[in-house]
Structures are given as structure tokens and as C-alpha cells.
Picture 1 (spheres, rainbow, N blue to C red):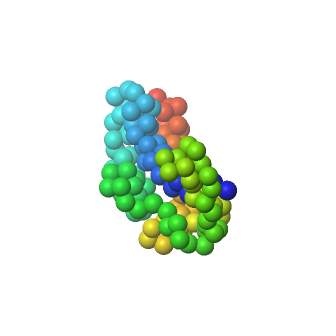
Picture 2 (picture 1 turned 90 degrees about the vertical axis):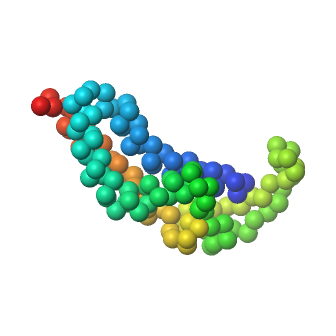
Length: 139
């Protein structure tokens, strides 16, 4: 069993990391003018990909910029919560539960894991493409 806040924090971290892949790629990997030019052109295409446009970008913005969204804690992915003594918390208690990630839903009621898996696959393909292009001399 884990404190409920741990599951919420992990979800926010995963979504933030999914979006930061693009930022790190742009700021670290595109360290020459030719790479930057290639990446700038690709970004226009990548931003229009359905998983980026409907999941990665808006979910990160909702969670991190708007402080809304998150996991639906009242769905069947979570077992019945328990209250336990926790001296690390201000009120000395934590609400803990177990979770089945396969049944996890976001605040809109949509299953979370299929989108996360698709987002990981999306970035994997984009970075493999970049690796292949960056191995060759860019003209």
C-alpha cells in the first residue's frame, strides 16, 4: 500500500517527463545549426501528431500549468483506502491504498495507460529517426 499522494505525484511526473523529452531533445541534442534546423522542421510535424496534440501537450499543461486534472481516485483501479499513522505528514496520518495501473483512469474517466504507452512509442520513433539522421552528415 502507498499513500494516495504518491500515485498522484507519479502520474504528474510521468506526464511531465513525456513532454520534457521534446524539450531535452531540442535543447541538448540539437546542438548544431544543422540539427536545430532539422528539428525545427520536424517539430511542426510532431506537434500535429494526435498523441502529442490530444494527450502529451494538453495533459502536461492541465497538470503543471493549470493545476487541474490528475487521476480519478474514486475509480476501480484503487482498492479501499486505509488511514495509517504517518509522522512525516503534518496531520500525522496518510491515506493509503493499492492500485491496478491497467484500470487507472484520469479525471475525465479515460484509461491512462494506453495513452502513456502510445506517448512512449511516439517519442521512441521520433528519437530513432533523429538518431538515424544525426549519424549521417546533415547537408
